[in-house]
Image 1 (cartoon, rainbow, N blue to C red):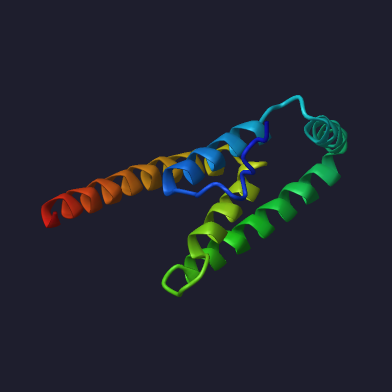
Image 2 (cartoon, rainbow, N blue to C red):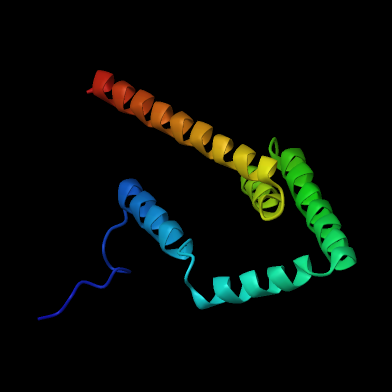
Length: 128
């Protein structure tokens, strides 16, 4: 008996969305080796006040540049919102306000896409 190759199965928008959500949830498991290593490194940085300050400044600068750069890219064709979310993710590693803002933006974007899909389904139903 052979199993279907995932690359050969037709990809629908819903199956892709489900797969992406599953992959994100699997990557956020806290007991993965890379996460344990990063937590140990962060504890070490926290033990050195000057290094901690420089680290937070670097994270804030990099995340801020990414977020602002992404906002500048939003009206252009390309990955503007993706860069904004990447910048907020970088900022969210150190700043709770950024983590909360990213979560709120994700919820708003999720509601927007649900509204968009419902409108498209209604228009498709009217056309039929």
